[in-house]
Length: 324
Image (tube, rainbow, N blue to C red; front, side, top):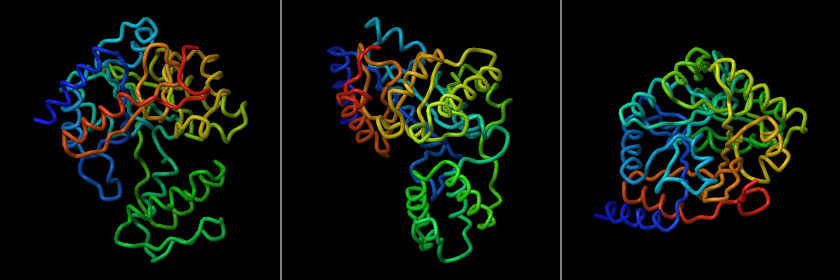
């Protein structure tokens, strides 16, 4: 009953003002994973997609840019996005997307295609396999972390401690911890051929930088190269221009700034998404579109959180989004 009421309220709100909702996923797991408690497995993902499909009109991200500017966005428009390029997007998410006829955009880092792991995944797998009782990062000024039964919390604390180190130092430490743990997990991302399979299946492939650095911590030339190389490699894989982008980490003013927005514009990107919550209305900057990740397990709470987000004014560089 409550979920039906929320769907009706959302219809009324969308009739008054048409705004674009964008939701974020990373992985869709074959089975629940205690170290990845906020990542849905296939069953949970299908449940969430059914909720979204019942309350929103799921549309492709590329077509929303012109429609936002023209004021022709359909009511209750929503885009699905996936970050990083995990293989389980192909193996687990794509069959569900096909079942519902739902378009989606997958933002792919190219440094890890066909081998290697992102630093955060190296740390998670290191914590999962860690043989000792303590991870000591005191020499790096990051502290010491006791291994407890709640390894998910341990992994979160280690990730938070290393997230804003320099790119090289962070990568070195993550690789070292992964080796020391004895973990045998080392291949989580799609291959170039699998990215092409996603593209050929109708999934929009977007750029996400080559190696997932926090752009604001790079000099402008290095940031541009990370973006341009990623765009070029993905264009070669897909055989089509890459015009959508997701900022790594994505917080306005902390993880990217106006210099990076200008780089995207210069490289011909037409849409870019952040991790600032909220929705985009007419006149929104297409290179700073907000995204949101609801995490509730019940339909009513999930849709309530989406409803609350619908009216949230997103943070951007320069304040409220405006057309460029």
